[in-house]
Image: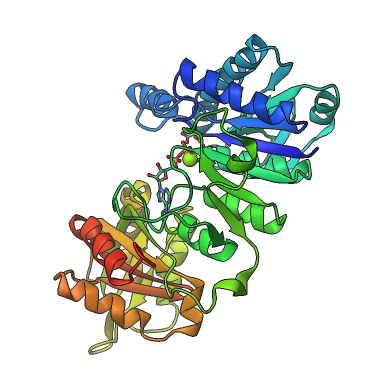
Length: 416
Ligand code: ADP
Ligand code: ASP
Ligand code: MG
């Protein structure tokens, strides 16, 4: 007997029929003698619908009220799933984040989990109940509801698993594992049986939305065995088969060193590029530009500063699309005149494509192969950034899918 946490995403919870299937699957695991905690998302489309309503009322809704609103999607899901389990004879109880409680900080819409009280959950599990806890939400010290950012139910699930010292966290979704790239973009993408924790962390941070990055961080910090698998298979399929399906995040890093050079390709459309032109090339300039941006709570990703000509240089960096206007305003209002920049330009239609793999550590020539492939497709590279296990390029968004497909092929990912 083991304590296992299941997470079901929006598509998996997308209709009452699907919720009944989730209940059947959960009941199967419970019947096999396991203690089960389920962390579901809102039904697919529901969080978007709620946030859309908010936008109809106000351009800049109050973040506290946004969280109050967005969290209701998960509250509906947990109650429906509890009813579905009860309808097939299982004892089940649902809780909202504040009832557990899952305590977070007060950063509305992107809160971080601080602690999870396991007392109530353990009591229910010991009484033979399936416990269902809302994904995506928690409560701050003032008792206000917070949410963990889009895709945050993954993080709730792994954090709950860590708090309960679960044997495993199973992330059920609408694909049957982690692929070499998003199978919606490249139909030849291949499922990975295992992916190292480091690679998964890079892929999630570089835009692969199959797991929210913070869930991967939790899995790493607590060495929580975490598996991504499909909720769209027969819910009554044999448990032995299901429990080894999908993709396991592995913590054994060196097993793959000698294998394929590249493990996966990630991409992110949520990018914009800002260039401050004609800035004096002297100490403190980068700080004056990026300090002002950071003070406005805007996250900067890629950065380049050009060689100076006649003591003047250009400074370019990227910010997420949602922060573009704010960043441009900050630069124009607070920075431009102070540093004596000639002008500020921006491009809100860029995307980032990244190749990821621990194999890069022991292979040379990955960057040149990447750049050759892009040049053969006539794709201009605007910025480059690298780490030990990834190379990212910024390109015009209209070439993004072409770039992903070409790189997937060039690195032999479909038949590796
Ligand atoms: P859920 O609602 O279950 O949380 P998400 O939509 O958040 O599901 O994440 C699953 C989706 O992630 C898939 O449908 C797929 O399109 C996308 N995805 C992006 N990159 C990958 C990848 N490398 N492997 C698998 N799926 C990926
Ligand atoms: N329902 C939330 C969202 O759509 C959280 C999640 O699904 O993980 O972002
Ligand atoms: Mg998700």
